[in-house]
Image 1: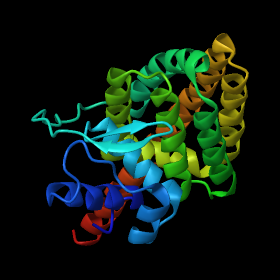
Image 2: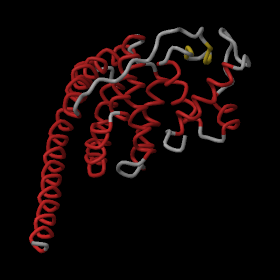
Image 3: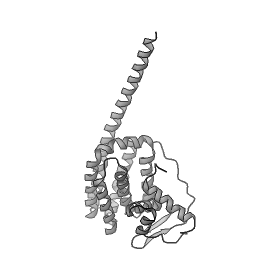
Image 4: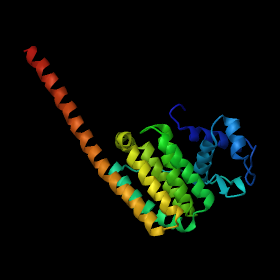
Length: 248
């Protein structure tokens, strides 16, 4: 539980309330402000939890109306594939660039305001902090949500699961994010500007630029980790050899 992100804890709490029958299918959840007070978190965290629940098919977020509980489906969450950080980022470049282009033609003013709020959070977060990661996640999910396509949302949620739950991927991304927060904030701002201008081609290119540079940074980080691992192995073998030589 301690390793879970804050929004995940809130999402689980909401699921527990739904399972208890307090909010049966078809009913409207309390507003963000009320839930934020109930769980002792910010409204941004509540919003992230609701986005996650929507991706899982448990709620329906209706702009200007509220969040409504859906019937539970029996679709299981599949096991994640074995992929590298480079492979995942290649897929994200292809998929999210097209999502950005589509979102530019459909995004609402309310969704733009939410995106701007995540950018503000990202600008004050430190490197690889949980706040920065949550803001990054929320930014990309909000863009996908603006496409108004549930298949896109499902796919995006699972891409982010690979990003945060596959240890090898998480390790490489973490190494990059520590020194990459400045580039990340600037690139996200460029994506936002094109979405705000409803410029589909500009949004597509800005997202491609973001992931192309990230691919280069991930390759550099992977190479550095491989070098460090080789050094540790050589150092360990040298130490074992010296101990063996002393006991002859």
